[in-house]
Each structure stands twice: as C-alpha cells, then as structure tokens.
Image (cartoon, rainbow, N blue to C red):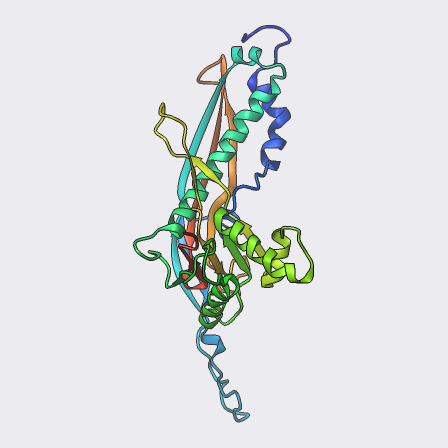
Length: 311
C-alpha cells in the first residue's frame, strides 16, 4: 500500500527499469526497417528525395573561358507533417503487492507503451502497402503470379515472378533493389520453392532467411509476422496479421540520402519520450509515453508489389 515503510512505489521502480524500456526491441515489428527513422526538429517541412536527372549524360567539354555545363537537378521534395501521439498506463501502488517481483509491473507498463508505438507505425505502413481494389491501390509497379505459389498443378515460377519485380524497379530507379519483404504465407512458399530447387544438389534442409537473401542477392529479407488485436474492446479476442498472407514487395529500402528511398519515419525530437507521473494520483504511478512522428511514403515507384501469390 502507498506510504508503507520499505515499500517501493512505481516511481521508484521506474528508475531501476527505465534503461530496459529503451533497450527493448521486438523483432516482430519491421516498419522502421522498411521506413528508417529520419530526425527533424520541425512539425512540418520537406523531405529531399532523389530523382534520376543526374543520370542524363551532359557534354562537359567546354572552352577554358566558358561556364561549366549545367546538369539536371537530381532532387525534388515531398512534404511531411508530424503528428503528436501520447499514451498512458497507470499502476496503483496496492497492485504491486500482487507481483512477486514488483519491478515486473513497471516493465510491463513500459513494454506495453513501447508496443503501442510499434503497432501504430506498423499498421500505418502495412495498411498502405496491402491496400487492394482488384489490384494494389497505391503502387505503380505490381504483378501477380500466373501460377500460384501453392498450386498443385502447373509450373510454379517463384524466381521468374520475383525477377519481374527486380527488373521493373531497376528500370525505374536505375539501381537493383536491395530488399524483399514477404507476408508469412508467401515466405513459406518461397522457402518451399528454394528447397525444391536445391534438392538437385542433394540439400534437403529447409532454407532459412539468409539462404533466401543469398539466392536473390539482396541485402535485406524481412518477414511481416506482426499482428494486432482487431476486435472491439470486450469482444472475443482476435489477432489480425498486419502484412496479410500472400504479398511480396521488392524494392529499395535505404537510409542513404543519395539513393531512392521508398519510405521514412519522420520523428520530431527524441523517438520516444517516457515520463512517470504521480502528482495527479499519489497512490498510483501513471507512465506516459509521447512520440511525434509520421510514417511517410517518399517514392512508391521504388517498390514493386507482388500480390495474390497464393490460392
């Protein structure tokens, strides 16, 4: 209970576990891999994005007294608008008595708040990337396998279907994509196909993610395994996959400013700001997390969407 001699309050516990909050990373969340964090101190502004005008050859041979030959501008801008977000989690001091290790209560609060940021960013980006009408809603470059990757008849051509995506993006941005992102179902189909391909060399082990990176010669291979609670509060629990089941995206995910960048997470100030508060309720600690950001698609033409890959 509050005020009992020798009893740690939530605020005191927080000081012991705060480093764990900032160190905690959950591998399920991939949005900030696809959309790397860009820092700003402004609420709104412009992102410089790479264009390919600089690739156009310009004759630079000029007379000694002539001005230098101008080249096309290789950059343009896209606007961002950061939104402020805040979440809170309250733990009463008396509830700490229910924990064998009271420090776990503060850890739970911190991880729950950290997860809210991750879920919010994950849904923001995945909803945009998985949007479908009859075809992908937001992508210029997309396709669907003529033979589904889990079909029981016909010739499955995972490599050709994927290579079509690589070629489309390389033709668009001038460099070969460095990233593949797969829904869980598509990931299983890719592994199964590569296993069959490698069986001819006597290998029977199911390929891992590194094997897939090596096969397609990419730097990044990420599987969208994250889920979120989609039921109304009080209804039967339901988990929904953020990244669908049968998508693959092929593109360029880079934090380098001199390369075409698919998306970025624009963060104002610190990524997350965490503060425990007791003034409003002296017998409980309210943990407040705030984060100002926008998940922003910068160049959708640098990503190819393979959809409807499974039956």
